[in-house]
Length: 440
Image 1 (cartoon, rainbow, N blue to C red):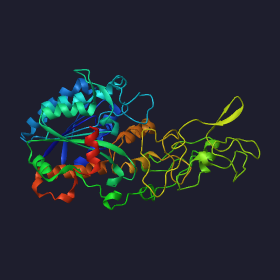
Image 2 (spheres, rainbow, N blue to C red):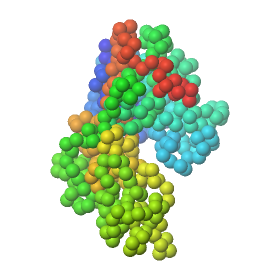
Image 3 (cartoon, rainbow, N blue to C red):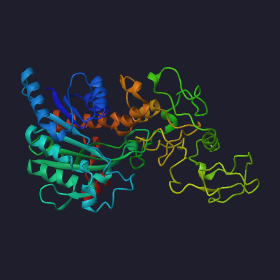
């Protein structure tokens, strides 16, 4: 039987490719932004696409699903609904969101309650599985309940709604590097399983969750994929000049911004591979090297010129830029997974975005590799419109390597749940699940 599926908040469709590989067939995919939806459709040509705010278009999703079911004369139920609602209003990377336990602050961003759409679609379509992905703060950030105004998390609201519809929630907070993704990427997943499925009985009776084992995790005896391993063989680039900042081929994706002479010198002075930062540089603009300077110094003790550190000049006197010392102007470590690929991968700002060895940020092509997009992924006109848009889509995607692993678990739970062995699935006693349950 076909494993009929639908996707809400689909972005560019990359994350759902893993579920497709596992045997799920997406019939409808919905996304607000037309540019993202166009890329999504290129990579899921079999799906009907719905553009617009899902608070206004969610009934269109149901209409299209019903039309697809009728057109193929299939009686198969909807197997999977995936949803990745926007996380910007939840993200710990923003310091303007107010306290996480302040429901009034959390409710200022209306995107924090887009889970209401998910509940509405589930109530009408009754999928066998529902998978919701977001940042870990999804489980803890308080908002106002849309009906009672009580303080509640979006995750708790959704869980209560789906509990009343007959679904069991299995939340986890995981670092996707534990599953073979070559970057440290902490995300919350909540898989809802319909309680009338044989799969639910198997999970409950055997103390399991509907997730794969994190076979690359140190606590499971595994080894994580490093950034150097993941990017081995990619042609070198340099932010020092336009010619050196771009490589032919790669669909135009292997290119990086060109920097000013000072910014380039600052990054070029950071030792390669060790995860160091420009804040630790011991050289100055005039060429003095191996200086004996403190961590808060901004000028060279020998010649008085600014150090090759993040410096601004205030009232004629250089001083260090305030904040972000642990992340900005810092290289990735060659012997560890990459830092989280974000929407700001093209900037040197608050995230760790610098190549572990070369004087530059990562290219979109490299970010795509770290996000485990297949090389066959199509971008269409998006590249011509600007690599910034592409970087945003990549940074917001769910790595399809993980969704492929997860999808195979879900497919097995539908096809032959009794045949699943205990060492295939994440135990309910694992802290990734146990702590997420506590947060929820």
